[in-house]
Image 1 (tube, rainbow, N blue to C red):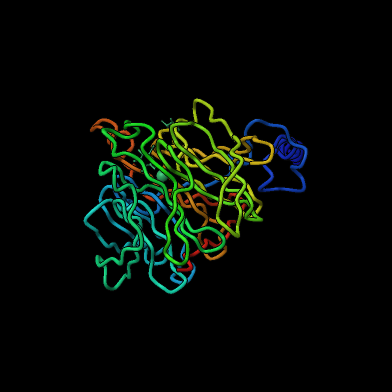
Image 2 (image 1 turned 135 degrees about the vertical axis):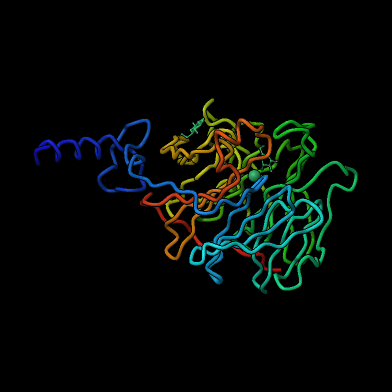
Length: 337
Ligand code: BGC
Ligand code: BGC
Ligand code: CA
């Protein structure tokens, strides 16, 4: 290809890209439905973890490890990108999220409890709160610390099969630093992804079987939510919206369960800016990690796949890493209590 052809192709590519991430200045006016730079993105399975339901990826800067859980196996894992090894701790019930504590150690949602754990003394747990006492068929699902150090986590009914469950049984809860838990929202079908706008004044939230991403006004002082609005209505190929994370530009990265992809959404315009496909369908959640927070880690699941499905997508349940996105993440918040 002559230099001129190459240049004009590159120019065309840049001009057709409206993803604000990789080439912000050049791409400002782009109008392509899917970012062509997505073609340059690298996706690899970095650890064949074999998770039934891998979830809650979180980059812990102080240990330079990628935390995650396997909800149904009841494990919390720490994967080290240097050694490529994972260390796990196993609990008696489901563990649906893990959040580092300012004081050291972690908070986990285990069954219907939110509790503190230490890596050294696990599976010992110190219970902070127990919810949904009238619903023994419920369990916690996704959870995260807010910018003020509260911990938010939501519940759902137990599933007969993935995404098949009694609807409207769940709630979203907030645990404050003093250990008081309160219900922020109910009813919820499958409480899932959580994230905050850069100024902390919007909470982005996924109730999976509503097939959308919503925003609430978030009062950082009180932790109250208000004024629910739809930010993004999922497309058919997005399948079921699951976990999400924010990038340093305030965009949402949403893992699409059964969709085999992570998509980037501009919460202000409601536009889908980018689609990153993965070689497994059950992509559950994502976070930015690595020393510069430039790598997008994606957890996946194999629960619900039959033998043929597993043969087709043998990396289901593995941990994936997307590089060369040209985007940076933000350090994760910690629980202050
Ligand atoms: C839950 C899974 C569920 C999936 C899709 C995940 O957050 O942990 O059990 O199947 O969302 O709704
Ligand atoms: C398809 C999957 C495929 C994946 C990766 C998804 O859109 O549904 O079957 O494995 O893309 O290309
Ligand atoms: Ca989830």
